[in-house]
Image (cartoon, rainbow, N blue to C red; front, side, top):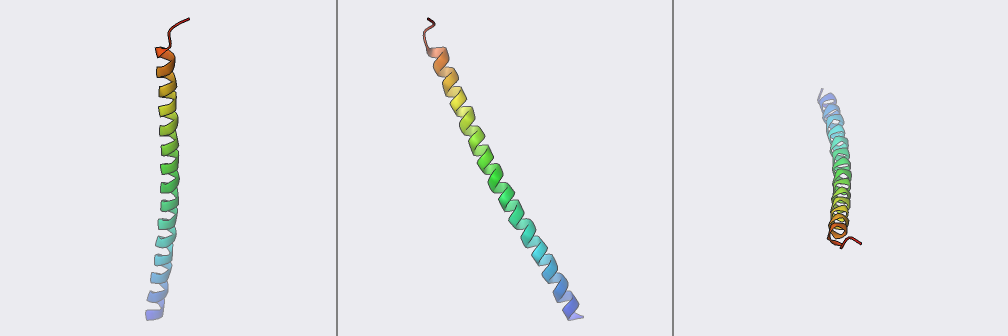
Length: 57
C-alpha cells in the first residue's frame, strides 16, 4: 500500500516539476519578448521625436 502511495506522490511530484519547468520557460520567453517590444517601442518613439524635431525642408 505504501508503495502505491509512494509511486503516486512521485508521479505527482514529477508532473509538478515539469509544469514548473515549463512555466519558467514560458515566463522567460514572455520576459524576453516584453523586453524587445519595449526596446522597439522606445526606438520608434525616439525616431518619431527626432523626425518631428527636424526642421521641415
